[in-house]
Structure formats: C-alpha cells, structure tokens
Length: 321
Image (cartoon, rainbow, N blue to C red):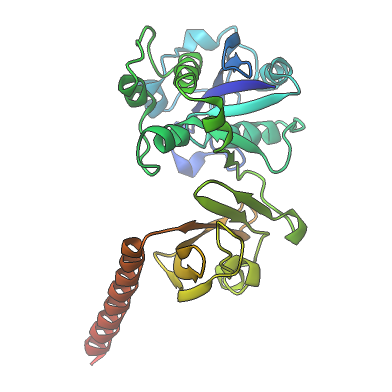
C-alpha cells in the first residue's frame, strides 16, 4: 500500500458563473502529489502543469493564489495525457490523502468531463488530513489552513505555499507527525458518487460516531420519511435508541434529533440533505454519544426555533390585518 498525498490547483470561468461550462465548473491546471509508504516514508513525487482547454484565461482569484503564468502553460500537456500518467504513477494499491475534501471530487469531475474511465472504487474512502489534524490536535470541529497547521507543528516553511506540489509536500509532513493508526482510524467518504439503491447505502463506524449515506430520493420530504434515514441506532452498540426529541429542521437542509440508549446514554443525530447533479437528494446521517449538557443544548435549540416560528406566524398574521 502507498499513500498518495494529493493536491490540485484549478481554474474557473474568468467571466463569472453566467458563462461557465456547467459540466466543468473547476478545471484542473496543476497536479502535485507525494507518495509515502506504509511507514509514512517519502518514496516519490509527481508534479505537472496542465494546459487549460475550457477556461484558457485565469480567473482573477486564481491569479491571486496560484503562482502560475501564461508562459507556464505554453509547453504543458492537456488533462487526459497528464491524468493517465498520474494515475499510472499512483499504482493499483494507492490510498489517497488530501488537505480538505474537494480534491478527489474535482479530479473525478475532470475525468468524467474528458470521458476517462475512473479507477476509483465505490465507495471511495480517503483520508482528509485537515480533519484528522483537528481530531488529533484540537477539538474535532475546527479546520485550520495548511499553513496554520504547519506553524502549529513548527514545520520549517522552506518553499512557498499554494502550488500543487508544495501543498502536497506540507500535507505529507503533517501526516508524518501522526501515527499510522490515527490516520487509518479516521477515513472520509467522497461524495462525487453516492449510493444508487438500498444495497449500496454506506454504513461506517468510527471511535466516537457512526455515518450513514443513503440512496437517492426525489426530495427531502421523501428522504425524511424513509425509515432507515430517520432511524437512530446507537453508535456504540447498534441497538435502536429511543428518540427523546424527534428530527427537527435546523436551516433548510439540516436536521437534528436527540435519542437515548439504555446502555450508553444520550445520542445526537444529525442529518444533512444534499442534492446530486441529477437534482435528486441524499442523506448523510451521523450519530454520536453526547453528555447531558450537550443534550440540554439540543433541547434549548428546539425550543428557540419553536419560539421563532411562533413569533413569525404571529407577525405575519398581524401584518395581514
């Protein structure tokens, strides 16, 4: 097994969203990667600039962040050629690691645009080092920038940030501050491809929570009527936990609930509804054990939302009068 620490730089439509190609919002213009063996020892590097075909001028934000100029693209190869060489370099036993959750999604989107067969399995599990850094060193919720994390670990900044290879390099150094078991215990799921049916639904268990990714539904009403979506199995023992507060909306596409397991106490359920490219929606559900104090916060949130709805209805009623 080899860890492929991947970083991509991409461009977007310089004329804005109104003129963008909806089949490829972000076009990859640089691929950088570092290969580590199972002991996290560096064994190889990959870096190549990609000549853009869809957005041939750089967006102003891209120019601000990325140190690439027009001259860098003159002799560059196009994406299909670079991608095939990169995937061959990765090898068949590759396990991907990134800083954040976007790179693998955009890589697959670019592969699909050029009709290049995807080599990735389903579900695609990878390691988000930004998330794992927070799990190991901080509060599990915060997300530092790559440079901030390097500063936290006193990693010497010998090369500039914001090129694909340099960012992959710094991500690999942060990985090397971790124990392999800390990485392997905290995989993430890429959502470019999601389950198409009940059989493909994803169930994952971690140290402090469980994750479920559902099949598609025509809308959020249908999703929130599905028994598997709204079930609350305990994240520790798997037994069905009794709901103390049923699922309630927090914003337009998020839901919370509070459940109780006789053996393991309070559980917090969270559902995020996301839309796919075909406009169907799917649910991402997490369930984790929480304290009585955290359970109280959920109760308070439910009451505050209830009060806000009551006041809104009263205001609208008085306005009509």
